[in-house]
Image 1 (cartoon, one colour):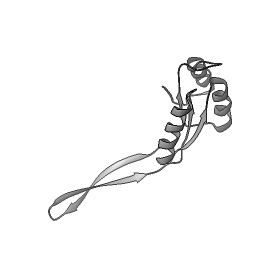
Image 2: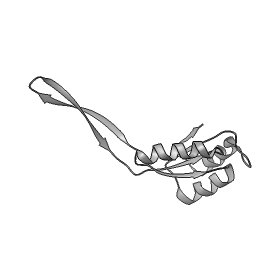
Image 3: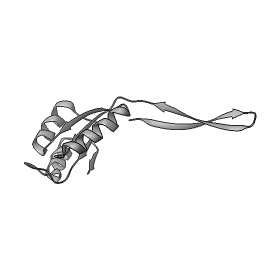
Image 4: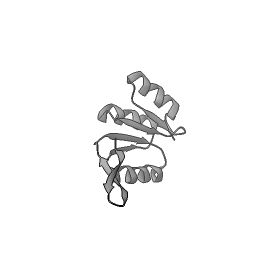
Length: 102
């Protein structure tokens, strides 16, 4: 996960603000049947330093979840083969990985 901290730096004329970025290489799994949404999220999250894996249906999402053990899952609700709610139930049985429903 990436954290931003705004730290004040003393100057003669007052305070100057600067950002210090602390990067962590965490894995995010994006599961959505819309390939455009998957690609958009992959581009933005990769730019921020995350390792992103995508899946295009619930069954593929569960397979990749078991393979990569992500730190977080971004999950669509309405998908073919297995809906997001069922995928979320199965992820919950496996542990406490955070899931954000799209």
